[in-house]
Length: 327
Image (cartoon, rainbow, N blue to C red; front, side, top):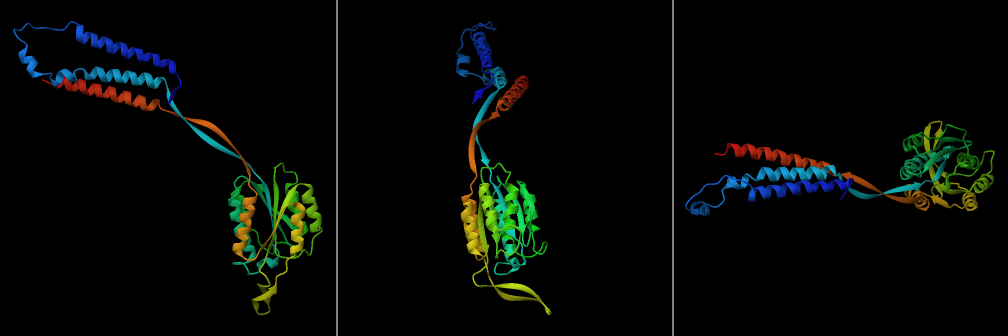
């Protein structure tokens, strides 16, 4: 504890002087007296309660004065608080929304699993700007870079297949993601590209998009999603929707090449658990740089002393009333 105005504590000399004056008057001041032949009856009786209580009002008033002086000197306490300043990372999630993402080797299907796990990833990155790019036969920006988690999550939930031309334009998807962050001044810029197929459309080749990403210092983590071998896939037949087993084809060599060129990594996800583990691993690898600042937080204590002074004054008033009522 310390005082904002410590010089005011010199006023404590006033109650000390008042106490000396009070004791002087009690010991040597003029008081009524009576001559008696012997003081034996008074010596045997001891000190009465009234004789003790009559000093209590002065003691309470003196305590109140001391507390008031301490209060106006403004006592305070301080605690060191650490504030963490984080330097965020710009991340664009580039997600394949071709119709093959409806395959049900993931639960309930690939695109739903990818969206749910991406939402968890977004929630765990409070200091980063994150954007969303979707691609199939073409690509577009679902959400630009932002720190608004609620908007990001809502827009991620709206991602679905069938809104754009079907196909798998991996190059277009990566190029759009790079365009979203090429002017960013973030120290670290990352694209997480998720696909389940082979590049078969688009104006920009994946290799060209990877070189552009490298030029801008953007790392690309690529994720291939799909079970090994065959996967159940919903198809429309003349008799209604049906589930058929279709071969899983992922251009892993291309995804590995994109990752290698940009300094990222390639991952293969064969089920929901593996995909969740991949996002967790990327989350651990891409840690934001943090700095810690320490600063004091002050707590005012004068209120406690002022309240104690008020209580002393009220007690003094109560004691005076009781003394007057005593016979």
